Image 1 (cartoon, one colour):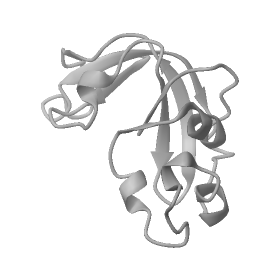
Image 2 (image 1 turned 120 degrees about the vertical axis):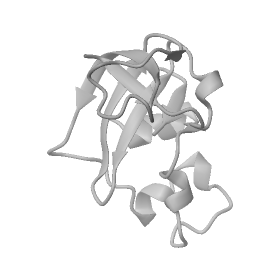
Image 3 (image 1 turned 90 degrees about the vertical axis):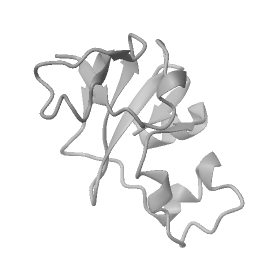
Image 4 (image 1 turned 180 degrees about the horizontal axis):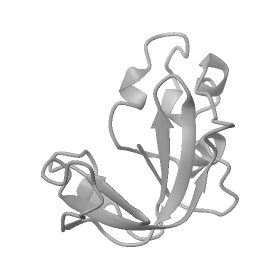
Length: 124
């Protein structure tokens, strides 16, 4: 469907805009997909969303790329390369990084995805 749904309190919802990159993290696996945001979030529940009442805001995405069989692990070595972990110990708790939508640098987006085009990134 090339639609992504988010909740009322999703961090950064108002800053997501067309052209942003968005990547998707799967617990215990790593980053498993990315896409380009095609539309701003709209409060427009989509019938294909599992729980449209909990996730009423939808945005269009384009050029989705899935890599479920070859996810990018966010291990200590990878964290030590990320801008988001500058001045942080990559061996300490890092759940904060993947528990919510957050803005990341283009550098981090490229390290966390198989993206080959420049975008400003949003992380999920």
